[in-house]
Length: 133
View 1 (tube, helix red, strand yellow):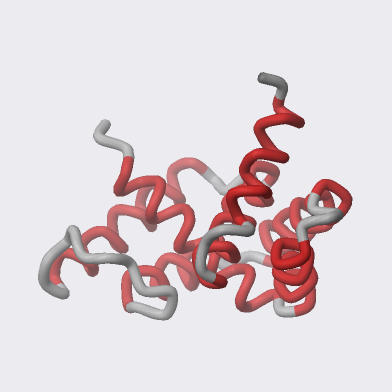
View 2: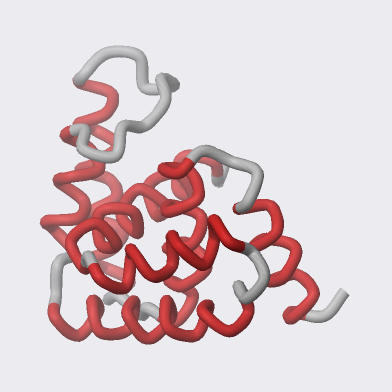
């Protein structure tokens, strides 16, 4: 499977999930071109994981505007990284043609940089929690 086929498959999957899940998935895909400092990212993720654990069951579903996700978004916030995310979202537009919900979500995320950044932070935290290593 080529990377283009994998991307198309992910975008098609985005049509079948909730709007919030769709936005987070799109920001995860767009975030492939975002390059945060590795040390800062590791530290920010660790702090967010601790906030999640301190709030009760660390296995509970993440909340887009929950303390852990918001703290991660704030810790990593940087105009250069936001510009990289915007570039990634713009690159998804052509691939999403013919997928109405996904096209609409990409447009909304491109219009609302704060929402896109929050969704990107949630995607990062979800990925970190899913990684057993």
